[in-house]
Length: 148
Image (cartoon, rainbow, N blue to C red):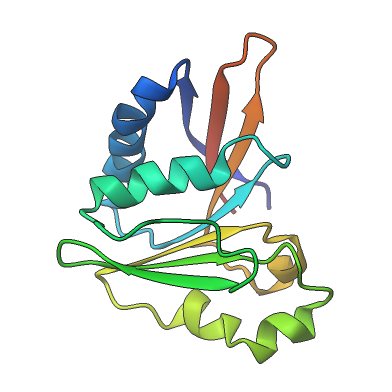
């Protein structure tokens, strides 16, 4: 079974990030809680996640969890887990950090944003939202949002 297209968001300038994050979250209201982000290094995955966290009322400094692997943020009645799996070498390392808790045991008020999810693809279920980020020739950032 293939992916199901949900929406496309184009971000032309950094000033549009807030509106793009709000549009993205309008979809999240349907109950989706696990989001995996694909894209080349430097395309803006962490920057977009920062904007989404700001829309969720997170006042903590949101940064890439490349070395910590997992950052946790608290927003307005929400909890956010932000994972960066770039440094993991195999699925066992993901299981060792408790990846299954982030994928399957989330409370309704919890969001999980995962950068570099390739290593855990066999664990993803159909409720996972896939965000493909790319840079257009014009410099715009394009987000294609799908479900598995």
